[in-house]
Image (tube, rainbow, N blue to C red):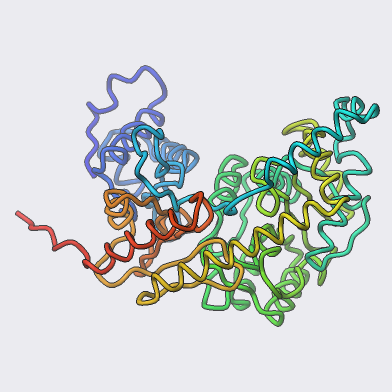
Length: 460
């Protein structure tokens, strides 16, 4: 990478921002590619004629924007594109694209369910109170409904332990803000949910990777991270996003024991567990004083029903309330009222049963059509994790797949830390409106995989 003093000379703002803007432009233009290492702070400072501190601030700004990732002892590397960078721009531009890049269930409630609950709300003379200001942690009846829904996962809590959030993503942000001081270090699985990474960046946290194998987090890696002084561990033990692994019961016990011994808070993202036919109990059921539990009805009932539930240890509940107050004052009570009514009358359970049945059928289809390739797909998963055949680069494959009419997400969007030798993509099964549309997308991917990677570029 080459940056000259003249590249930043015309900038009217701080020099660190000018340097960050130049590097960001090079990343956007493809002159810097995912995984590429940037110059050391000292080397770039000497080339451009600024202080090392100025370059340090520039690199911090790039990481804040989500364009780079720094790794202690190794340097700063260009991060791959985020899922939103890969999503279709407009329906008109990409009308033929089969979108398998976003992770949400195949369908939600039908019009009859929606109409029925809206009629009930309209006929209830007490419903106006739902539109008043509410306690930061939510209305008592909404918290009680949340406790009933959470019990389906195997975690049994009282209503007073539940906080209402505006969906699971907000719940993750609230948990991070409640448990970890700004700028401190967090560990997460080496591939993890991009929404968590976005929240961690926004809050100024430094995220470090926990090594994975076919069974999920490796306890020895968790031990090493805890010894290094991390303040929290974020993880998705059941149907991990993106790898689909389910952490075995013995590893769950080991992880919470290690965390408790080192005083590390565990943030458990349990959104997908409701789709697993027989998953182990949540980490929070093993160590309720050490784990913040996050779930929602957005993945399990309706994507637009932005109601989430957070269960935190007693010592952190005031922090949770403060985080909710600072981010939205209170979760919107009307969606929480709809979720509570559906939980109470059995509608939510019926919708979830239908989603699980459809998801299972789509998973079978994905396994069948991509059976010739290395696909991780645990029972109940809403997505596949496909390790690409040799010669394929995940970024290049993602671009080639789009040219073939399919949107997928490359491993760089989920990676914590620097790239490794394996190349993988996440294939989501929920977005297509019909199984036929999903089959079209999967067949296009199989055809592309079967054609092999592009010939090596000539070097002149």
